[in-house]
Image 1 (tube, rainbow, N blue to C red):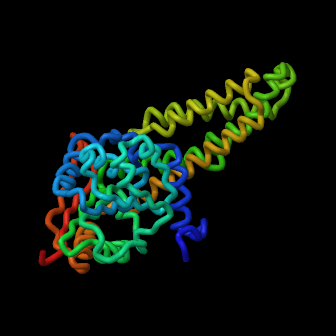
Image 2: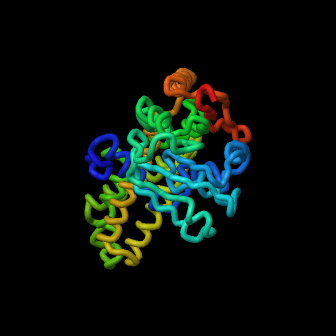
Image 3: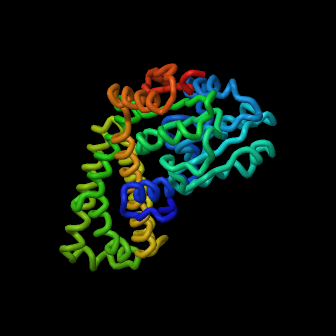
Length: 337
């Protein structure tokens, strides 16, 4: 089955759809709220050290590239001495930065969306370096590591940054899932807001007196006001309330626009549908992060897979960004070389 034919209701299809929607927003990487586009600090240092040995004639493969933060960094570091890069992702990716990059970068970097890490369309022993930043751990590791064993040269290397099961990133993702589930529950804030939209549209038509005598309108207003007060309590209690703050801003903007006649009921409802879908996609991505982040046993199993596929694991370390635990780093080289 071609990757473009992945059924949308399968786990791979859901992952492809959710991440395609995210990359279309233009974010360079998956941690836009946590890391800068320049991948500063220890994250950048890890990749600078990894890329330092590359020559212009080398070939690099980036697994789970997203919108290409690693190829973008490599372009900034290497200039005209740019190696060839194949950037692979299961989703459809939209790397807008590439069009305005220097000619050497545009010639050297090739994105391959809708491409599975478990079945790479590249020749054997083709790459001198395989990299992945928060990507490989989402794959079926038995198959994807075997593919790296096939496509990496006999003198080739692998460098990975993968999610840690106890990192702050994982904790944030877990909290986001909990909060989105609250927002999207049948009696949650978004359902309550949906019910009040028709009445706000009537306010814009100057029919407030009629609404004051309508018990259903009064009930909807009280439910919405109570839900917004509950939201404020949840914001105060959550260690990572960003999704709640975003939802509050969304609802304030659209309820005001409706009541002022600046938006129609259908416009508000369509924006609401789109926002709910965006929340569902975000929660899906966060669940995926939590499910695929590696604890010590998971990292040990990953090491064993690389050894079984002809690699010598050189190092596995924790990576911190200031006080924040980011993930695991792993470097490996083809065994016997």
